[in-house]
View 1: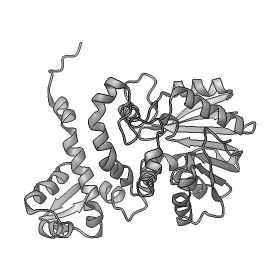
View 2 (view 1 turned 120 degrees about the horizontal axis):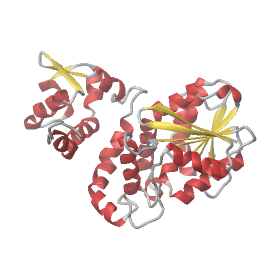
View 3 (view 1 turned 90 degrees about the vertical axis):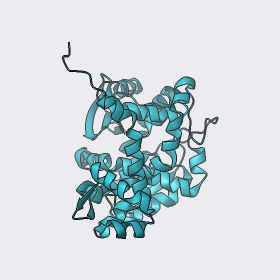
Length: 337
């Protein structure tokens, strides 16, 4: 029995965490970190350049200091090392895309979590529709922001897969549900012998091709349009689905895994990664909260444990399976045909 004296601290910190969250999201929206990455600035200069009202500025910037995103020395504000690396829009390491989307979309939608919990219905732009991504894909500007957001949340895992999977055994790969294409880009960058395909709906092609061209990979990485529920998956050695399976209900998840199995040659590999929940469902809070995000965002999606996915892969026919942690909350499940 615990002898720790109960404290309200964690209750209050979690219950009011939206204060800190919205402060960070607004700082990204107003490009505070990108501005300070150019050079440190004092309060007056920063206030003027970014268009803050004098009443708001000091408390806002000092709150970012207290939260650890900024530093202040002799009245001059600097980015923290992590903010400078990951929140400067001019750097390729920028992960703010997912946070931009959180600010524009998810912050509002999560205000309806209680309704989702009571009804089981998603609460985003597509409320009342079973077309999960139709509203996003119909607006080119919103689509581009969404695809950039997927790169932001996936970059660390993409690099881990590119460097740690045994690519020497294979020559071709396809990222299905490729979004901006960062997973197949990272794989091609780290493995000169791999030729890759990004497979997604036709509307994604311009954003994908721009991203691939920026890395000089157009000769080895190409786009293939298609709907992975309606069309065959590419015939390659390795099929990947990053942050894809959690979008769909159980039958749809199993259908995608079966399609991957059917498209692969003997010895081919299927890699699925998400913020996979620990088997005891106790420690990966991010994975569990991501599953609630799927409740908000999709008609039937949910996140899952490694054991769940292994079971689905074995049911589809994969003879070898393993779960491997990648980075942060993300893990991959690998199936060998």
